[in-house]
Length: 341
Image 1 (cartoon, one colour):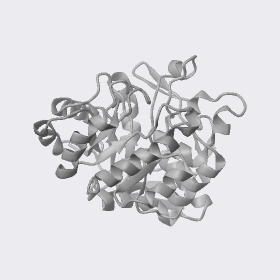
Image 2 (cartoon, rainbow, N blue to C red):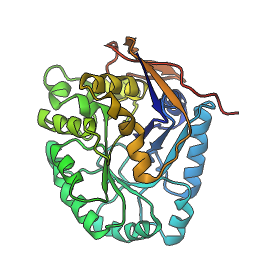
Image 3 (cartoon, rainbow, N blue to C red):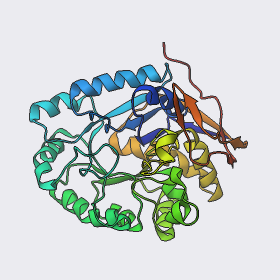
Image 4 (tube, rainbow, N blue to C red):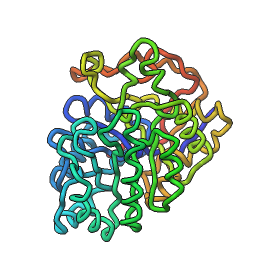
């Protein structure tokens, strides 16, 4: 059985920089037509010059694959002139609460301080992407942030606000309260719960932020994805860390899913008799919501077993993917495109 996906998009991706970028970027550009690339480098990607430079490094790392990086800038207090320069360079601006996740120490400390920039973004049509967690008890952080989303959606009704990597049933319900709210959801949050991470032996390669939640949360996410909710999109939040940073005290947060994302999603949607909804989830919803026209690219998946490698290595880096060493029922075939010249 062959499944064709047209111009699939990853609406939330971490590519890192340097040697790690060289290793992982081709694993996304091989199977996606484009991706929304996160800006939380060190230092963060926070102005027009940094956006353009990072985009150039990404394209070099992709080796000529047909792949469009939809760039983002790290949220800070911008002037109108700075936002005007960014408007044609970025897909959106990513807001991190200070210290909420990897390399977010320079994020927003008080939402009130961000309102002037958000007001300008609303007028310029620049989407706001949000890592929606407080600093409360780890299982409650997303739920506690939902009132902030409500306030933002009401205060800025013409601003498209994307709730990134949602993990709870409550966030799914909130999606239906406001037309200007959208959301991404990851592969891991459609598959696992906290029990998979820490219910037995600790599995560091499944640890991420936001942390996986309860079975009823996973079921709500899965139901929304399988039903074709028009404002729910796939965003892998694939977040590579070197193996020594994952298998260590102070385990780094992030699950690396880029190489298996589409085959594993195909298996999941087939399991629930919903393969006809996968195209919308990985491309159609995002294109309709944001008016995107991604590069033409046909990605073919085959219902043939794939052994997930134990690790991906190169450029002095070693990264362990989700489901390492496991067999999954779908495989990525050669994509229907030629290299750019």
